[in-house]
Length: 362
Image (tube, rainbow, N blue to C red; front, side):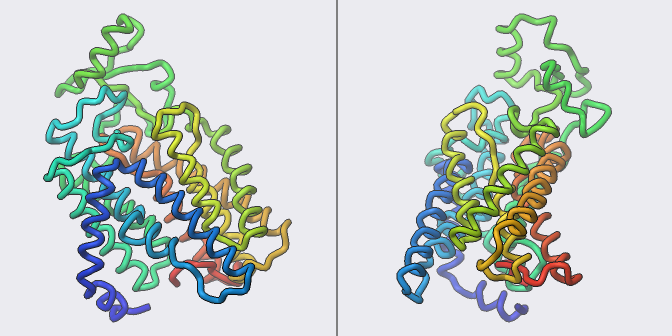
């Protein structure tokens, strides 16, 4: 891990071109569909690796690293590029989908073939690649791909003129209750908050569609923001992440399964939970507790996985309340939660409480 490693990686012109293409492709598909497809590729890659190991083949198949986490579908490239392209397209007035929130948050929407939108996705794909290669090459103590998604979100908000936090129309960033009562505020300068209860449903819907009014609070997931529900989800999915890594030896299989389920969310199926920021910290912590090996005892692995599953879920909720619920573009709570919780794992390794650091590039 050195500056030389970063320079060596960034000196490959093929990587730059592939990252540009991956970011543009993510924009064309839409950030969320591209991410869900990445999950399917992770499942395929990790299954291939488990099978080759089981039959005694030494060479691992690099589907996960080269395609799912590489320039084709790496979240720091395709997802981040798609999210940035949505922010750009909304700013240009290209998006008119009737989305309940600001159009720039509509990461399920495929952005098609506009050359300027694809170019923005490509540029941010390259940006995400640079962040990932720099962070990983220097051995920074977090998941470099997740950090690439986070920094890219900050960059697209600042570059396209969006507020980093957004317009806060409540007394506290933590208060989600206005969403439950469907309180609205006008988007015009100086507009005041108005209650939705005094309007007809048709009028409220029209106001949302033409952009004259916005919900006071826009939680990242309407089905997943209450603290108790989030905590319970973190515990049970964390346990599943720990179990999967024990029985398969794959630290990324649970993450892939969680990501693949988001196809249902992209297709509009209600109540689908988002869990990849739970499974990945959970399985990573289980391997770190076992000293970096996947040969581990079940109960300790499940215990630490439950703790980091809970931490991943709750930290994601904190991030969404600060950076998503009041903002105009997509700021990804799972990526921030993964970056934060892999940092926690690195700290526990550095202070000697974890004997290993799993797959982190330390």
